[in-house]
Amino acid sequence: MIPVTKPYLPSREKLNQYIDGIYERQWLTNNGQLVQQLTQRLKEHLGVENLLLVSNGTLALQIAYRALNVSDATPGAQPEAITPPFTFIATASSLKWDGIRPVFADIDPNTWCLNPSNIEAAINPMTRAIVPVHVFGNACDVETIGAIARKRNLKVIYDASHAFGVNYKGESLLKHGDAATLSFHATKFFHTGEGGAIIFKRKVDLERAKNIINFGITGPESIEELGINAKMNELQAAMGLCVLDEIEQISADRQAVSEAYDRLLEGNLQKQIIQAGASHNHAYYPVALGDEAQVVQLMSSLRDSGVHARRYFYPSLDSVVSLDAQSTVCSESRKLSERIVCLPIYSGLRTEEVEMISKKVLEVTR
Image (tube, rainbow, N blue to C red; front, side, top):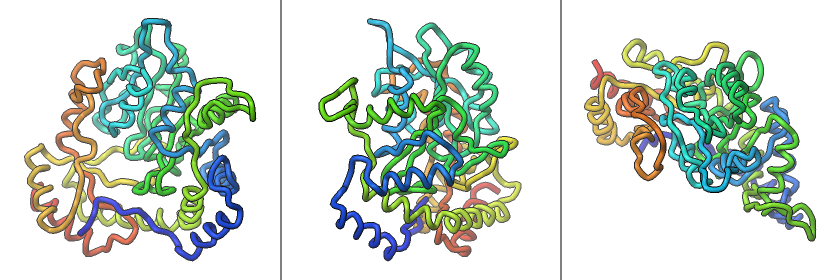
């Protein structure tokens, strides 16, 4: 069986050494030594400041909303945030879960990220934030989005779950926005088994978030605000430190797979246009087929060969009734979600497997 992705398992010997240290210290959570070490190493590796580790990527979004006061509203009025519908459900459900109404604005048909030209029309007196997504690690138009946010006095929280290690114009993409969130789920480019991080623009927001992830506790006998438990534990950090030690090999492996697909599928499919000035981390290999019928045919053909591709992202979230979102039909997102397939990509995927998968794709699309 060839999965769409496979968790990278680092050196067991090195992981055991970290676990031995955990047993010796008997310190499992609450900003332990390994969490502190991983925080510092990630700041250095990513080229950012004000980084906070948390227990998962969804809570990273919710903590960012709280720390930046996006959740606040006048009595009887619901705050809103503008976000794209072509994304994983957590982007929108985290808003809804935190009492913020998602307002969907359509995507750019080339980059597949939020189209800035659709933002202004979605702004109203209850809009508190813009929550764009660096889809498949592709950089949004951060300058235009930032200009709109400054003009309309809105917060910008980037869902950067896929954008680990991506640079834009020579600096970390994660520096853009009031906050950017990462997911360290087991299937991600970099992972801690389960986990996430928030990178804040301002240190004051980081300090507030530190209290929020620990129940709002600020001292042995002091609870200053409503909080929750969103702390990363030492076992997660141990996995992250091991993976980070091998991140260059992970990156090289994924790039090799991606380049093999590029050679084999050249000119046959619509692919995401990478934002000018941005690097690419090869975290995913998405392709858009001609129509939904081809997608169904390809998924069936791959399944018969033991290959599990994924319709990711499907469906377009503006069609999900339970989100109770405000939007018109986002036609570009819906068209793309009907045609999208993410092909397998991970360290250890063999050349002959990439060739077999590519052959199946070509049989359907030619």
